[in-house]
Image (tube, rainbow, N blue to C red; front, side, top):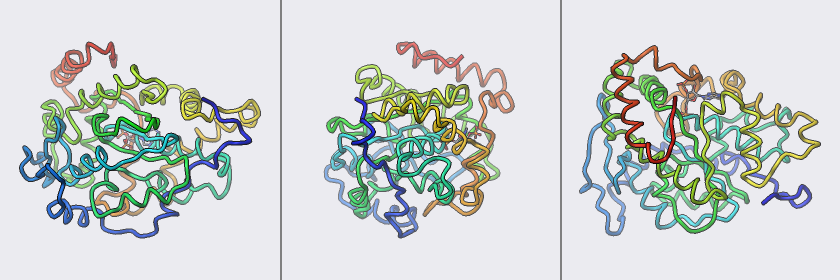
Length: 343
Ligand code: A3P
């Protein structure tokens, strides 16, 4: 359903401009995880594992290995999140291009308030994650989720939660980004090394293959969104990182149509799509002061760790042929029924 230009909403506004406080999210959420009552779910009784080489504990909730601190978020999202019909939620496994898609989606949806070539574009002063709120952190406790109410419609948000954790009702739209699993594994390891420099690749590789990895099993995560996109194509769009690399402009157009804000001929002629792609390119985002310095708000990792090579096929530099075959076999076995392949 397209929105005509005259009645089009102003689009999302940067979350950081609405919510000014910068609490230590990790500490605040950890304190609340143990103290909060989650109804019938006792977080400390769920199966647990330590992520190899780290102190991060995962808990298995409804078949998915979630960071312990985010189990309350899964419960909260399922029970308390009331989506608005024009909400747009970006969903992904970590390291599949979330930051890029957040930036592209924000720039696309907010383009009438913030033209991509504008000198005051929010993405020139804020990280994509400061523009687009992270549902998992907001629903993890402490009433932070109420901050979403301050956002005008349409809201743009993101999550790493499996599709199963999102509420069924509400009719909001979800855009999922999927990435070749071997490249995702390498990207995740490189990212974790920004906090644990000695972490061997084999530890990350093994935990991903076992399924007991952050938000895993990765195959069930992909399956949930894949099936949703096939069953409810108006509500769930399935994008692929490699396709975005191959043709970012066409994927931005697809995204715009999906969220009900297709580009007009005048916008096409004025180069708005190209402007969005350029503003959100790896080179552009990486060069910005806000993305080169400091840490993610309230989290432990440096912002620059979000921008690395941004290519397809980097796995060949880190995996033996046996490791690659093992992961390909898992993918072929688990995703066969969907017809989804990564070759
Ligand atoms: P690599 O580590 O393979 O380079 P996420 O945002 O989900 O954490 O994903 C991070 C991955 O996306 C990293 O992959 C990062 O380099 C890549 N990335 C970030 N911004 C990008 C952009 N604008 N264009 C292409 N890739 C980007």
